[in-house]
Image 1 (cartoon, helix red, strand yellow):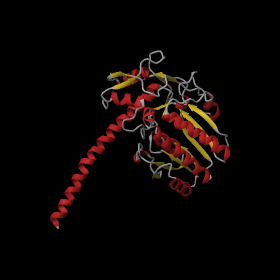
Image 2: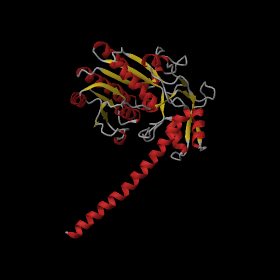
Image 3: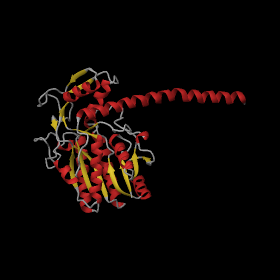
Image 4: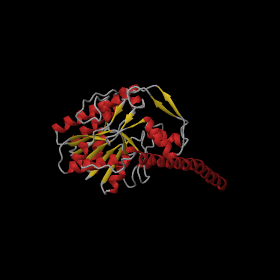
Length: 352
């Protein structure tokens, strides 16, 4: 049987697809390529370009490929953007997910793994935050994900659709084998932005808010390596295949770093003292959020292998260097290929 990975050409989804392909799984990817890339999809894995909300497309894809499990990554993920464009986020994250879940139910898909977020907790009163903590999002992004969680639980209760909801904390790093990583233009992930600043790809890094109730006044986050995160998805799939009951689980390490901690680590690992400027807080950013991770370790047997901030930063820097090399090749090809085409066209005209 086949696993459908939505958003499988994006940052986390492409890492998942590589992991599944490495394990010998049959995989098919659905991605609209708004932020994903064709080259990020593992070789030999079919890529269908389209929307998760296109029910005719999704239904045909599930039936054609014999899909019995869905890992759903496709979503818009930038918190400040969700504040500016809430209806866009409710359409892309919530309405499209509802359509996808309906297709899964109608087509008899048995297993569903949903990419949720720690943003559903809002500004938690207790740290670390457990899965039983109140869910009080402070951004449309968080609400869009929480609504999908609710729909999935209700559909699972009414139909034969076993599921695992994974609430991500801050995902960072890149494939340790250098095949894929965070490649979105103008991305807002702190470690990626800091890595770009260290390599001279950005003139500076902005720190949004220095007056939070934290030791150094900047936000604290639980940073999880993307490869450890996708390993959690693989563990969740094994759990569901073994007949596991629905679960909602945090995906984090259980400890956090401040924005300034991250900046210092990137400067130390890169050896570059890049420029940092301070700006007001952004709307929708909680002060501190760190995962309680005991449940995922106990329920899935998940054991992180890359729980080390300098390693995460090293992989992020390595990937940014890879992207620089890719872009240089692309620029070279864009110059040389048309020249060759023009030369051949000119020769043909002269011989006519």
